[in-house]
Length: 176
Length: 241
Image (cartoon, each protein chain N blue to C red):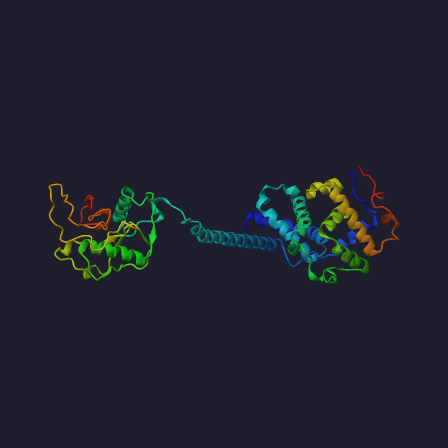
């Protein structure tokens, strides 16, 4: 076993859970999420030796986000599995009805909107950071996030959620 | 504008966190296996890319091989008649072209070859052969039926042995005929064999009495109709009057 393979194996063993969850959130499907992790690792392998050990996970996550962002150009590669509308309970432990609905709504989003939604509202990144991460304009991030949230709220019937329904932007606080 | 997203108390984030926590992390795949799978996928991708590039290259080469020969423009004059010299006839080919370019009373430009049909080539060579060796009922038949035939090209006569070469020795006779240009072949029976003796030291004979005006304007010893080998070129002499 080569040293690089050892490093990758240890990294995956330590970060597998987080990376798989991140991939699942970016794709909306556990299997597609694992594929995304695998694809990102494959992309990182050539430059693995040059990566900062402390920043490997951030680099892999960045690659995952960009791959998911470009999934529109490669729909077959990154498209969630066919059972996305009816998630298998084996993949999701303790799946409540709310989570099932949320997952279905998340899967129904276009790939780019889903990526922006996950990075914005789950990873807690700013629009500028997301734009830099994905290599796009900040306005694009803003519009994608707005549309994604609107569609999510419509599908999940969050009209009674006053904290979010009014305007999610106003509900945020500036932590700077 | 670059504000962070909702705080931890935001219902959406809480729901997303719960959803992310609900997914299991593929315990059936360890890191080494994932690494190996990644390498396999990369190898397959490289192999597929290589195959695609090789196929595209082969298509380009094949397309070029088919397309490029069609680009040869043989409609107009090309250097050296646009034809490579035939096997074993390179010297004759060059000599025929030299003759045609040196003496071309027909007004054709040098190096411009005129293609003739097989029947025309046989007809002209028949006239040449009858003029040189004497009239006969035998007609020239070319050995090569594949063509193409061009004026000034030597062609091999298949039935050269059927002609009557007496009183000459045919052992030194070349069985090839240079296809003459149109109008340059002499008339049949214009050459009287055997040729009479010269009237002077220069080889010029006096005009024969009562010779008709219908004979060849070139003379009875046209250099263009002589066989390619075994014969020397001779000067044209006035006919008639």
